[in-house]
Figure 1 (cartoon, rainbow, N blue to C red):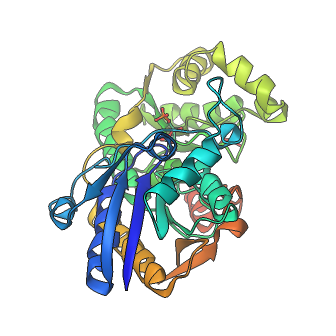
Figure 2: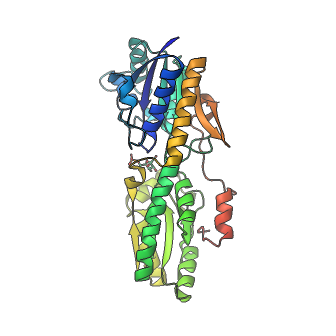
Length: 355
Ligand code: F6P
């Protein structure tokens, strides 16, 4: 059986993309007569017809490589149906590239936006399989996305390093962790790094409550405090605002960690600093966990291609690799639930969640 597979990576990159690409390719070459076409820079490349016929050897030596050998871009889903000023119909263009390349299927590696477009293309009649990647771990229907655990390791290392300098200087350190809508990365790295305060977008905070912990520690002669704050964390007042209103307000303010550091200095009189590790959390080689997960996801996708099973995305459920229908998961958020076991663990440890 011969199958021509198009493969693309879309949205923000993360460690494990190349391991997943390699997993798809290695298993596809193993399971059937595969031809693989690499689409450049995500859906942008599918629209523009930018691609590369791949050879087997191009999938060698990439297991440990960060980023994506295919390149990526953000092509917002909300604009997919919008006709460009130059008259380009993006959906029609993607379908044309798929047809011109004589593809039997398209494998899309990405996060929420990528899955929404994958679902759209599936509904337009293309054979699509998704693979869930993101350091945010916010894709519905999978316990974990690949890239998440590596980012947890990196963010934890940042917190560990901040811990020693915080203790030396007796400072309050506010570390801003990636995750605008979901706080999974902050929650896991905060617990792993022994943070005193963890603030998530899902649990609006009260700065007075946060200050209580910092002050109590200062009084107990533990002069330093560690705060792990998600970039999307918000105050109770902000949580009541409409999204647009909140975003407009935030655009006029410094980043959240700087804001909180300043407020704590004013409220408690501590010396505070903010730290923003930013895209470091998405860079470099995948952890061993993510190499295994990415490989499993990739191999499962190749098995689905062999079976001719499309319109799905691969997922982890417990210790099983499964797949969900794209239409059931695309656009469904996966915030941290209030009763998540790690949230409960954090609270039972006495970690201040800001509420
Ligand atoms: O979705 C992954 C992520 O790293 C988020 O945590 C973060 O909010 C966003 O991407 C940053 O996007 P960009 O790389 O476009 O600045």
